[in-house]
Length: 512
Ligand code: FAD
Ligand code: DLZ
Ligand code: SF4
Image 1: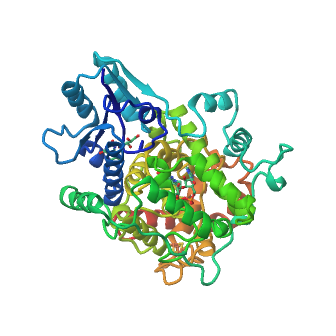
Image 2: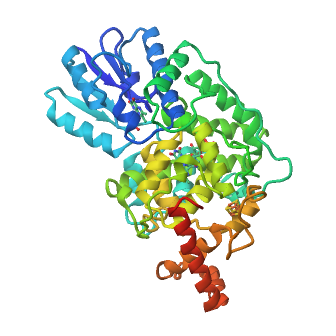
Image 3: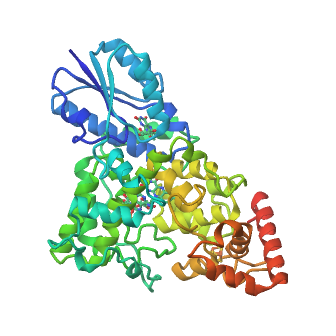
């Protein structure tokens, strides 16, 4: 009897049980391109093209290996344009004895599939996603009974569990768990992005680009040039290129930002890991090998591995532990609508404009731009977390809710009240001036807080701290900033708060 094996766009991994245990010539794989997923937020067109091309290539590889595949293209006759609808149509057409799917990465879809599972007369199993370095049960066992969930302690346990950067005596390599202090250098003169790979577009990718261009004109972003890897082989080349040429410099300038240099020493691997073309453990092991062979320094290797073994696994744990309520969190009661310039890029703030340009052009901007530019601004200005969350989910090629929501709602906006991060990542223009060259030539001046040319990040920063004093003044990491605020005196404080209000009015009126 036929087993229907459903594969979602971010489950393109031969290791998954749904794929690995299939019987050739008997079972049928279902992959479906559907409008409901393409437009429920205004996904970047590059993200959609990447996913559809990678899905089509994965389906072709399955067919070449002798498997039966039901591939539903976006324009195919009868496409119901929803994932649930496509499972129903496949059940009708194929009369399978059983349906198998890997747990999706979004609560919304898991809920839909759970409802379908109960409604269908066919056995329907939702299997765990075994690609992750920490299962739900393992995260729960670590989290239960802890007063606070902090990534650093989780990460140490993960290092031990996966024997990554550990010495035979059970100590961390180099004697320390974390080398972050060495990874925060401001940009040096001449810092630029090393050469990155661009993959040849075959007939499948060209057809997908044409499809996306015609059918999704309302979606966000620039479609071409399109450089993405769309097969596991290509993604492995991207990984090798990173390990060989870029990893050695990953640490030092990890937080630096440079005009017209979107990538610097970042890996660009998140889109491939998240879609399933690369496995997180293989990526970490290759990085560790580079360190053991003397090719990459420890601060770079540890910093890189921590992002995947630590942050990536940790945010997933937070997401599933606190959903479904997590995406509605608004602990700081932020209510401003998302300014239109998040979509149009039309703002006088050079740092924001730059981050929007990278995002629009590449469906990418690196972590510090996401956190300390666009995220920081939304935090300081008090923008509604749900609207910010939907923006981040739409605009990055690596965005899926399990990873995007905790990063946005928890890390960038502190809207979860500190479940994910002990203090808000709030910073004034001074931080941006130190870590980037964006301020040169900006309409605003980072050293000015009040007046016509005042950098909006400055007054908004102080106003944010003043607004939330009740919540943050007791935080062990914040007394220094409140001492500075108190030293200013009442007149300066009042002036800063009215300046912040003026920035918010300008923001609402599209003049900022
Ligand atoms: P690198 O800087 O090279 O890092 C190496 C790898 O570590 C990444 O490929 C990724 O797999 C992992 N990683 C690094 N930081 C994180 C993190 N904070 N959480 C989870 N994994 C991490 N990452 C996503 O994968 N998808 C998202 O939708 C996403 N949304 C974000 C939204 C906000 C507001 C912020 C602040 C961060 C977000 N991140 C997200 C985390 C991080 O910014 C991206 O993983 C990273 O920028 C991807 O680029 P890269 O592959 O070049 O990463
Ligand atoms: C993001 C996305 C898009 C744009 N399109 C599809 C699609 O056509 N088919 C599909 O299976 N998945 C798509 N996805 C990903 C889903 O929205 C969702 O984020 C993941 O499947 C969660 O695991
Ligand atoms: Fe951004 Fe302020 Fe610098 Fe302008 S002056 S680039 S707004 S930090």
